[in-house]
Image 1 (cartoon, helix red, strand yellow):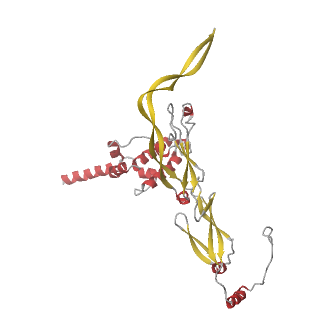
Image 2 (cartoon, one colour):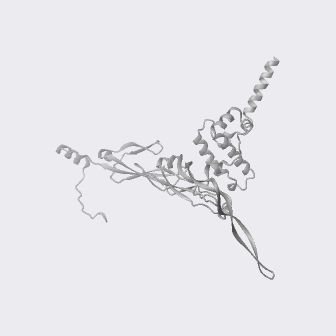
Image 3 (cartoon, one colour):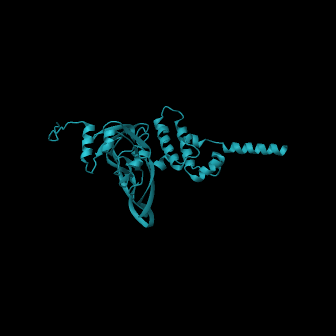
Length: 356
């Protein structure tokens, strides 16, 4: 009996170890079966919402943001996540696998939005390399649903080299005596000999998040991924979104436009058809009346998601073309059509500009 009690107590302690610490899945708002992309998307969304600079009236803002960073650090790493799933946060800490770095900065770079004051004031005083601007072709499907894309580029990186070099690595204040009671302080650059360096071409792989609703020309910034500066800091890499042409849809703002060709029969008697949307779901289009060439219908909420608020979506506009039969009609068919339509001839001539 005593042995069984010990075993039960051991199980209880074991279970308490599993649930010890913070619930990282709950913090990120994802299920335990969430894949890596779902975790990244959740972190990106929550990081924007919980950033302390957006919640200055919340005394717990820093704690919430710190918890979010810790959750992403663990769940985005397969080894840490496996350990966390087995025995919780304390196990990860005991293994020394929680570094406490800022994943918001390392994962997203700058990405075109800033929090807080001007964090670049200090950087502006330091020589910086040139920014690199690149265009990135993105499919309409990716802009509709979102995606994570890896890009690879060659970048110049500063590496140590043998010997020394002359540089302006130091600035000093110099006082000059101009006369009785008059002094002038000026800043001068001092040339020192520094360890030599060389530029090496290095292949870099960056992960870019394509967010639903992003627009053509929108920029994402990766800090310090631009050209290097021998005496300062690297510039930034700026990626510009360029929408690739699509075979079926055209985007205008948050609205989508498409054309459908229907038969003359469908144009006269009505039809029921489905359009495959960008994410694969079906949009049903039905008409029980005559559809003339150039007629247009709209489907609200079937356009592109709004970038600022993905719960809002634009409109899908559908324009119809009518395909006329290419075969010759028999005299009997012609007479039958005339009887059915029962229309008199209406041959108006106009110039195509002012109408009838």
